Image (cartoon, rainbow, N blue to C red):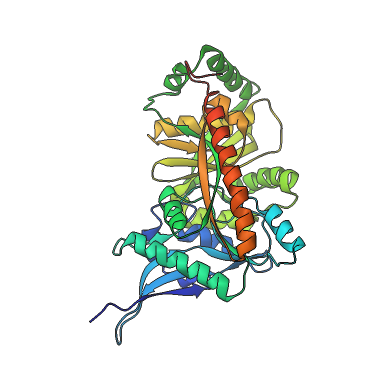
Length: 389
């Protein structure tokens, strides 16, 4: 008897999935973890009103008579009414398509909302053919897009393996770059400094001294030890910074309490105090081999405190805990001088309209060459000995 075909089903909330089954496929990545995505939904940060309607994909092997379908794969998917909170910018695509008479929104987005971090997007069970399951998810995504008359479907911050499979299936590939710090087997921060040119080494030492020169101390608070009062303080920092950057914060106060309760084992808060009073902080998430710096904010400005809290404390922590790298968020060429190297990121795009697809393809061909040249140029200006510009 032949094996029944796999089917793709659409789910209106992450709560439709068993958390243990989902997390078994997410490779320990904090931003694809069931608890993280559920906190976004339960707090109301993600909703139809916010322009993020959950439409998660589930890939199932059909069971026989009296048997349940078996979950073989999944993808966090959203029907988007705008392009905010994605960090892969397609506003110009939307403008061009709508000027030509098309309707760009709504669109489908496979992503971790508000999170410019590479990670698994096509989740598959270890009990199945991984490539075949990922291909089935991609077919389901493009079919859903075409059946509902949507302009496009997008997968952002893809791991290289997922990007390869998407490209093989005809998705258009887009590249960009970020800055990541790599642990070259350092035992102490001074070992990292010793690898730098003399000028850059002196600069970092000076910045670290200045950051804590006026009675400022920095505490590492592991997730289980973060109190509600700490979350209150941090949210004030986050709200101040995000309001100045974007106008309205993407995340509300409830979200932080929810992740604190449901995934404390992957959370780390760097809390800065001025003579015992909280004034700034950086919230980090811990993956199996990576520290992810995500949110920073302050209510007092102090020289170099941002560099110290977000970059140097993160390096200190990564070295102490034998982590392979630190990812400190999107953008920021200033990270280069502090030992964070340029790294390419990938996204994949299904465009339904043939003419528009060809225009986007030509644009992406040029953009990828520009990104490649930029990464190569930036790499020549790293602060390491015999490498700094």
